[in-house]
Image 1 (spheres, rainbow, N blue to C red):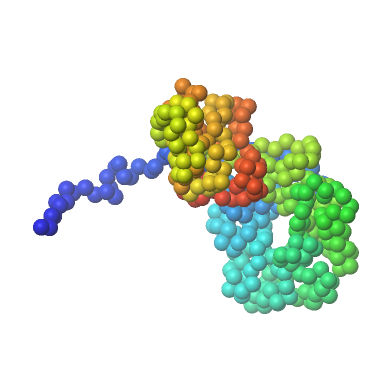
Image 2 (image 1 turned 90 degrees about the vertical axis):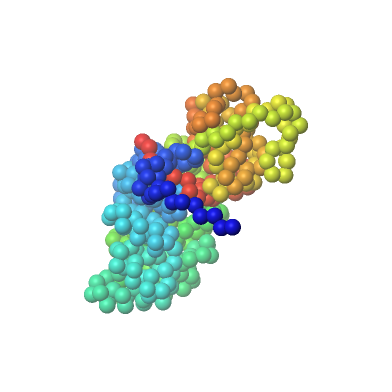
Amino acid sequence: MQIHRKNKGINFHKDPAFEKEIDPKQRAWIEVKGKALETNVRHLRSKLGKNCQFMAVVKADGYGHDARVVSEYAIKGGASQLGVATLKEGIRLRSAGLKKPILILGNLYTKEDLTISFENDLMPTISSLRECLICNNIGKYFGSKFSLHLKVDTGMSRLGFEASKFVQQFKKIKSFENISLEGIYSHLSSADEINSFDPKSTTQLQRKKFQELLKEINIDRNKNIKIHLANSAGMLLDKDFHFHMVRVGLSMYGYSPLSKINNNISLKPALFLKAKVAFIRIIDKGVSVSYGGKFVSRRKTKLAVLSIGYADGVPRNLSGKINVIYNNKFYPQVGSITMDQMMVDITDSDEIKVGSTIVLLGSDGDKTVSPIDWARESNTIPWEILCSFKNRLPKVQVD
């Protein structure tokens, strides 16, 4: 027998209950502190010479912070250029109304993509004569000059002209009439390593090779071409790496890549990861918790279930290795971190209730959990931690 349900006339699209926007802090979210970003950029910028520009690297959605917000506050702090990884990232910033020069750090190699880059006033990174020729033809077609940066490989073995061939190829590039060469740069592969001060280190040898190439092409004669080599680590390492511009990512977000070296720098983390307590339960001694039963209670235990998991970007291999913070106190995460939830031992708290806000990354009082801590425990780097947060985590801008 087929059962037909009567339509009671509820229009879900017009029902006020469905029109309300879901509170971004309903479950788990990222708080982005704009003033911290601005302060970090201003502080870092103060360490540069007056003729050295600051490029804010806002790729990967601003290292998970929201590229538009980061860009706006970085510009307030003194950034004069922006760096992205992809064409789409650049277009999004242009669509958001940002007017500063934007360099695409990734490789564009088709005529179609390079044309779109030109039409959106984005500067591509060029690593071969082939792409230079395409850009020149695009500029000629539009009756204008195509602004771009050349990249040379000095030891990263990734993008860039081969160092041994660059001088000869540069002579040809200078003859292209519809190219506006805005910059020449390279990228350091190991600047965050503790031996980077050693004259024989990879970092110092890369700088030396880069300077030799620049000398061979007499680039100093054209001051409109910006020379840049330093990432965050290179910028903090030594002024010899600064040239005309630095490209700063991690440090702008509040973390020093040279944490093992006392570089006398004060940075403020701009990202706080928070989650609500969705449920509280009490278990007896000897009860297993979460998948695989890898944690077994040694006493009567009160558990808080947080509405956040590895689908949000919290690495599963951090299970049982991290602490969270509530009201200036640490509480251990226990059991396997699941796709959407994790458990925290709150036996020692009478304050935490359903709906309480827990800090996973950031500070509360004098207690702090950093992406550097997570990276250490999961055998990775803080860059990966920050870039792993998924788009189902709302981003809330705060001062």
